[in-house]
Every structure is written in structure tokens, then in C-alpha cells.
Amino acid sequence: MVSFMGFLWLTLSLTLSLISGFSLMSPAWFRNGDVSFGVFVQCRGPINTPCNQTCIFYKALEEIPDVFSQTAAVILFAGWLLLGFGAVLVLSWTIIPAGLCQRRLCTPARYAQTAAVAVTILGLLVFPFCLGSSFAKQICVSSFIYISGECSLGWGYMMAIITVMLSCFLPIIGRYNLNEIKTKILKSKIARSMV
View 1 (cartoon, helix red, strand yellow):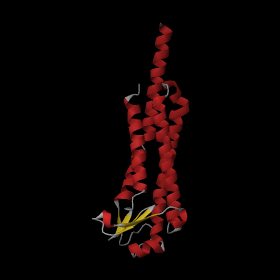
View 2 (cartoon, rainbow, N blue to C red):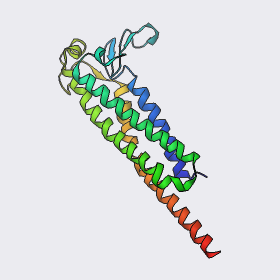
View 3 (cartoon, rainbow, N blue to C red):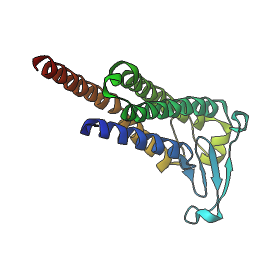
View 4 (tube, rainbow, N blue to C red):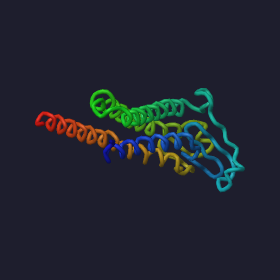
């Protein structure tokens, strides 16, 4: 039986992994008028009618306009993979017996989630360097590194920031869950030895 903390850890891990992937595929990281761009997508057209927008999905790393965007894309994708891997480990923990959680799944899941947070924060810090590129200056006019010029911050970038902030709690919840499991195992061993 999964405890409340275990269920919370599982639910948050899966949900934050999905939201992180969704925000990575969003074109709304920076926008100016009818043009918006993100890590893997660039869209042009009226924002209030998404059906009339023309979007370009970058299928290869070479298609991404500048080096900083490429670097951020690799780092953010790696962070998303680590977060997803941690979520899969937590999901598999719910299926196997409780005694295996301690060494084989819970600890690696926590480490993967901690690494995902660190890598994603790095990627979120690198992405605004692309504002100094010629590609961003065409859209944002007077932009420079960490200065968006005429562009405004979009919901995709904000969603990525909120997701990584919430992901910081995953290893903490995992540690609490592990302590709860150790306590249950210890109590059952003591009860068996008394009988």
C-alpha cells in the first residue's frame, strides 16, 4: 500500500514531468506582436487566433537559430529527460515490494530529480542569452542578453520556471517517503520479533 506521501510524490513527479514537456514545446517563451518563439518552436500570426498561426518546429539542432538557443535546448531537454526518468522510477516503485524502495529505486529517483532541477535551472539561465542573437534582434528589436527589448515574457517560459520551482520539492518529498517506509519496515520487524 502506497502512503499519502508516496502518492503525492508519484502524482507530482508525473504531473511536473508532463507540464515541463508541454512548456518546452510552447512557442510562447518570448513574444512581440504576432511573433513568438520558444526553445523548439517559432510561430508567426495573430496570437488571439492560434489556428491562423504559422509555426516552425525545429526538428534538428542545426535548425535552431543560434548557438545559445541550441545550448539551452540541449540542456533543457536533458533536464526534462532526467525529470521523466525520475518519474518513471517513482512509478515503478509503486509496483514493486516496499523493501526494494530504499536502495534500488527511491534513492536513484531522488538523485535523478535533483539533477533534473539543477540542469533545468542551468538551461533556464542560458536561454535568455539568445536575446543577443541576430534572430532575436529581428523580432525583439533592441534586445540583448537578459534584456528582452520590445519582446514580452511569455507563459511558456514562466511555466518552465514555476515547474522547476515545484520540482525542487520532489527530492524532499521522496526523502520523507523513504523515512516513512523505513519506519514501517522497522515496526514490522519489531512486531515479528516480539511474536
